[in-house]
Image 1 (tube, rainbow, N blue to C red):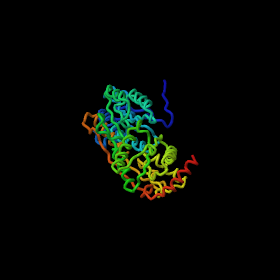
Image 2 (cartoon, one colour):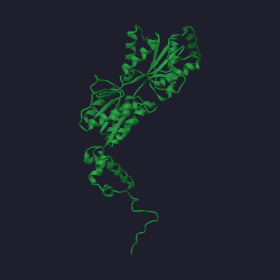
Image 3 (cartoon, rainbow, N blue to C red):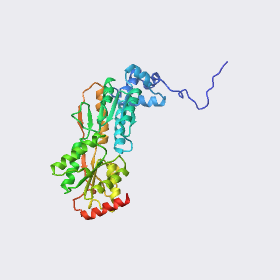
Image 4 (cartoon, rainbow, N blue to C red):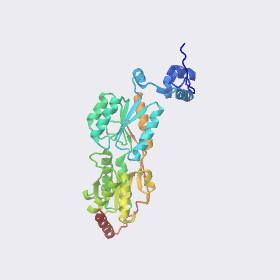
Length: 365
């Protein structure tokens, strides 16, 4: 007679259980277990917690392929973000993922490094992976990509931008208004020769909106932004340093600098400090994003606080409503606010001394 022996220490639960095992152990129906995983909002929280606890003990994992066949859903959302090197995007993705997870969705991420061709490639990969919805960053991309999503009937939202005039749904800050606010802050401090460092507005619609806001505010103050006062640089602290050197080389009488992001602004502060330029006595610097580091450097960076985590939650909720066939706002404006710290102050610079400082920067470059 063949006797099957069990290795000491093993139990009958070493192999994964199935949905019937979970239902029996929890004292609920198979349908309830299914809803707990697929539609947790339709099941009492106490029951969901019990089902998840037992499923974990039994090593039960729902079969996503089988689930998709039955429900015509993959329970996956794709998100395309330009970079993971900027904490505003990591905070956004973290909040987005947590909110989607509450409704049983998995988040798939594609990073395209501000390259539109690579963004298109990543979008096609997400579609091939079987996503039920897509989150995009900004609205500037070839119309063919929007057509692709619409042809596949895949809902999508453009995040990190507020564009009520666009035919596509958007959730984010009003970067034009933010540009007006930072420029007005410097103009009210008495600055007239203002510089600007940012990403290329031809490749980044958020940068274009910031620039339009700055230009509007300067015009209202009877001021201009000469081409010599505007510098385009890629996103890095080193490029912030290079941006300030370039700016002061062409416009040595600049008394204040607007940076389109905190990364550039922090680089500019480091460069100015190394050159002996006093901030804000000789040069005011202002940024966008309110990164954690911005409050820790000396002097603290005046910047625009963007509600990145709130945006992640709101984008997730709007996309979930769309997937459920419920109405959502076409464009949602999220409030931002100016955080004033030590890097900006009244214009009281001795222009001759600042010119000497810009000469030192040139000698170092």
